[in-house]
Length: 255
Ligand code: FES
Image 1 (cartoon, rainbow, N blue to C red):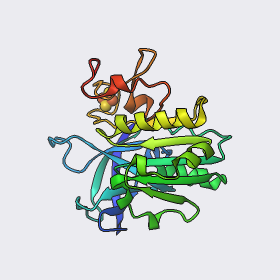
Image 2 (cartoon, rainbow, N blue to C red; image 1 turned 30 degrees about the vertical axis):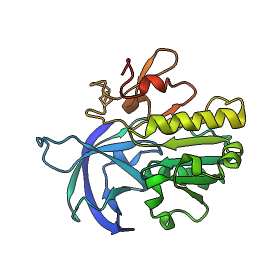
Image 3 (tube, protein in one colour; image 1 turned 90 degrees about the horizontal axis):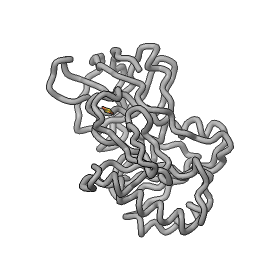
């Protein structure tokens, strides 16, 4: 992980709520993979605000494209201070041929860089947008991707077939939606598939990350084994059959 500067080369609005920034980045930041992200600072290094998580959706040589909400204003040639890449690449199995991606209540941007490599190697992929995630401008997604919309988890009508179909499943929900969504999903996957193999079902954990370098322990994820891992170092994706979801609820005794 490195700290460095990026320059906004181009800004493109793709919907009322989403804009794409093309960032010219330094060499260490070009080597970013699906599932990793940057912590970005737009004010001076001494500003009071925490860095924000910026999710890359595509990489082209020295340009990384990130998505940001349009409520934030940026300018061409603006200099951004980046820390990253943070986290580990999503553990996409080389044998996986069918991929189910589920975004609850927020943008599916965290999946888009992984999706690029999955589609390039002929994986079939389905993206499910649930709740507020349905507002994402899915017209901007690759045409090879199948998209399903649902008002909430129980209204996801195709979930039996799609869960049974997928070689790997990745779900992403921001706090506080993450644990309740992952509990419902885990229950469904256990019911539909009976046995869940290793490296099959992952949840993306995106707690606030004040440092991003493993120093502050603010992003702990508790496992069934009693071990604790850090989302900024070991995540963002964790095998949901290994995570102690109840212990990760905000008001649980261990939290
Ligand atoms: S954000 Fe500080 S340890 Fe993860």
